[in-house]
Image 1: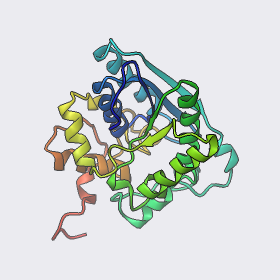
Image 2 (image 1 turned 120 degrees about the vertical axis):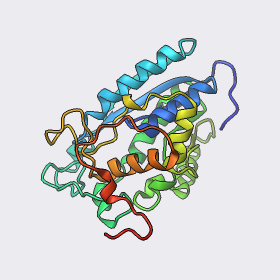
Image 3 (image 1 turned 180 degrees about the vertical axis):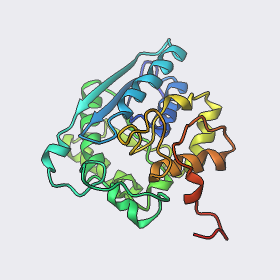
Length: 252
């Protein structure tokens, strides 16, 4: 992580999920003031933004000495992609069920989502004289999401430097080599309240209420992370994610 200077601010891209929540605690624990940015880009699981507010409220209480701001920014990704095939945007597109590494999960890719978000965050960072922009891409994202890979981050940082002829703003990805289980373990060590986070791509839109659906890729990933980390999972699942785990010797 970048060495913090007194009074320094970090601009973080956060969803309502557990990775973003841990990221927020990670930088707060390092003493950074935070400008947290969430995005409404037309995602079907917009419920995540409510949960982002919940865990950020708890974060403010815990780190009351820090200046922690939260902003929700509207991005017109869905409006610019009215015929999108992404299951996160298209209400008629079936949300794939199964393990998050399955090829079917490519249906959850939203083209250029992270570049759009990162550019907004970098603009905020520039205007606030912040050096750090960060998001919670991790090792498990690699197989499905090109904009969660290190070569993308390196290229994006090159673009930022060229665009302003300055290296003032740099995108950090502290969890790039972490598994989801390692993130869960780190969050547990930081006292993260995981019950205030929301991962499900489908629950809340399919009559599940405040329960995670248990069969979309991100639910399975969440369940598996807690299981492998040995951390108590506070999540209520409407369906059992166990059936989708990739366990050696287990029959499909």
